[in-house]
Length: 75
Image (cartoon, rainbow, N blue to C red):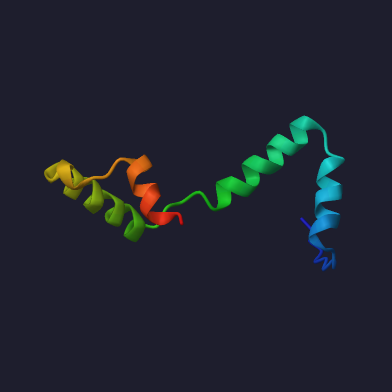
């Protein structure tokens, strides 16, 4: 198969305008292609979340309700 390399300078809005011209099926396929490439969660992040879940299960009283916790974050 012959290949060609194309370097096209377009801005984000031009990409949005091009995507708006796609059919719903094409938009869905594009969405799947975009997310399939970057859907892997690094092992380091998986271990961090797993560790936090274990700590929460061992000490559930240390956990805060989201409504309560959000009050401490927002002015």
